[in-house]
Structure formats: C-alpha cells, structure tokens
Amino acid sequence: MPLALDESVRRAPILAATARQRRRQREIFPLSLLAPAVLLVSLVSVLPIVYAIDVSLYRTFYLKRVEFIGLANYLELLRDPAFLNNLVRSLLFVFGSLALAMPLATVLALVLNQDLRARTLFRTIIVLPWIMTQVVVALLWAWLYNMEYGPLNYIIRGLGFGAIEFLSDPGTSMLSLIVANVWRSFPFPMVLVLAALQGVPLEVYEAAWTDGASTIACFFRITLPLIASTLLITTIVLSLQYFNLVTLILVLTAGGPARATETLSLRTFNEGFGYFHVGLASAISVVIFLLNIVFSLLYMKVLRGDEGA
Image (cartoon, rainbow, N blue to C red; front, side, top):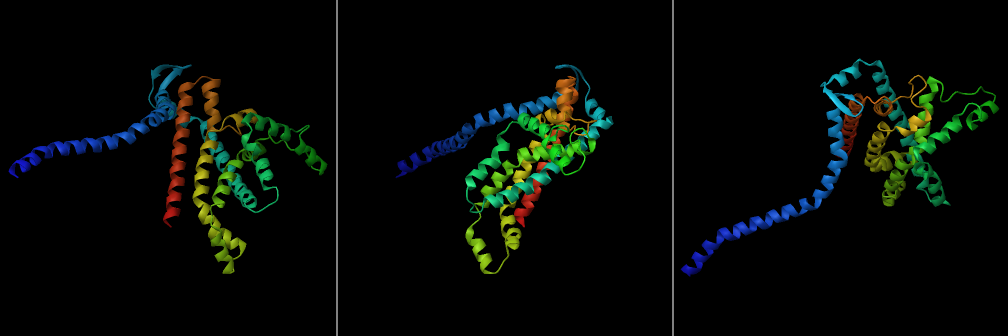
C-alpha cells in the first residue's frame, strides 16, 4: 500500500499536466477553425479601413502619399460649405428612403402573407427590382422621368398639368432619386419581413380573435412586437447600403443639379476617382464609416431596449 500511494503521488503532477494540455487543445481547436475566417475578414474589411484612416492623414499626389499632415484633411472638410451640404443630402437620402421603403415593404409583406391566388407569381414580380443592377435601374428611371418623352410626364400632361422637371429641378431631384432608390431596394426588406411574419404562431391570432380583438389591434399588439427585431435589423442593413450607395446616384443625377443630390458617398467617389484627391476622399470615407457605426449603435440600443421591455 505505501508503494501504491507513493506511485499515485508521483504521477499526480503528470496527470495534472496532461489534463491542462488536453484543456488547452480543446480551447485551441475551435480557435484554429475560426482563424481562416478571421484572417479573411481582416484582409477584406479591417485592412482597408486601417489603410483609409492612414491615407486620410497625408497630403497625396494621385495614389502617392507626399506629406504627413495629421488632421488637415478633416479640418478642410469642416471649413468646406459643400461638405455640410453633402452631409445633409446624405441624411435626407438615407432617412427619406427608409421612411418610404420600410412601410412599403411591411405592407406588401402583410399582403403576400395572405393565402392569395398566384401568390408565388406576385412574389417573383415584386422581387424583380432587387435583382436589377443599379445602372439598369438608373437608366430605367431616367427614361420614366424624362421631360420630353417620359411616361410620367406624358400622363401628367394628359391630366392637364404642366410637365415636371424631375431630375433637373433642385426642388424635386432628391425626391425623384429617393423614389427610384426605394423602388430598387424595397424587395429586400419585404422578403425579410415576410419571413418574420411566417414565423408568428397562428395560435396567438386565434386566441386574440376569440377575445374579440380587431385586425388593427392584432397588428399593433401582436404582429408588430413579434417582428420588431427583424424590422430594426433590416433598417440597419438598409441604412448601411444607402449611406454607401454611389452607382445609382452617379448614373441618374451625377449629384446635380447644383449639387442637390450629391451625397457623401458620391463626393468620395468624385474626389478619389474624378480629381484624384485621395487623401481628402479617404477622410470623407472615414466620416461615412463613423456615421455607419453611430447609427448602427443607436439602432442596436433601440433593439436591446425593445427586447428588454
């Protein structure tokens, strides 16, 4: 017995070391599986952000960094009245598009969630704008808005009114741009909201109808709370897309007339690829990045508050 006890005492540190090694292997194995994905995300997402921040601190000549100037590019933006105009136009474009796209998507999702005849055909037709490229959408709406031969002005003149300069009037160009953007993008939130609606248990509605609840009451007290998280997440995704949108605006209005539709993303494109002010364009892109972070955090705070209520 004393010999067996001595052997156990002698082997105890070895067994403990073996257990620690196995525990470390169990911890390292999942991390090793995640490493390629983390490396890929770092290369395509984090590295460009770091590079943009770095370039924004330099005076550049084309793609070459000439001189370190610190925050001078950001101070130049703050002194530039056009930058404030770009910021206001961006916010107007983003929140104007959201204000139209989200209610439209929700209403259409509610309609398509009903047991309609040819429901699959309707869903296919409604999703078509989402699969079109932004260039095609821009050319389509440029034709619809055309003052001379566009169908919209043809109808307006047929009703006895004067033609409307949809894209060449600073007073109507932003609204025209928002309408085109909403038409292109509303199928995406509609599909997500429709999926959320189909996850709502029918028994909840049956219990509410048994208690005499109206359709409107069911929507505001059952449907809306149960799909609120989907609505908020969709709003975050759309906000990021709208803030970074360039092609549609560039082809449809090119930021005109008189910079009435020039958003921050379009200004970044023009400064970087039009005038080759790469340092200044990087500074604007960093501002867009910070705006995306701020609005995403605000949305997430609302989402957490809603879930905690």
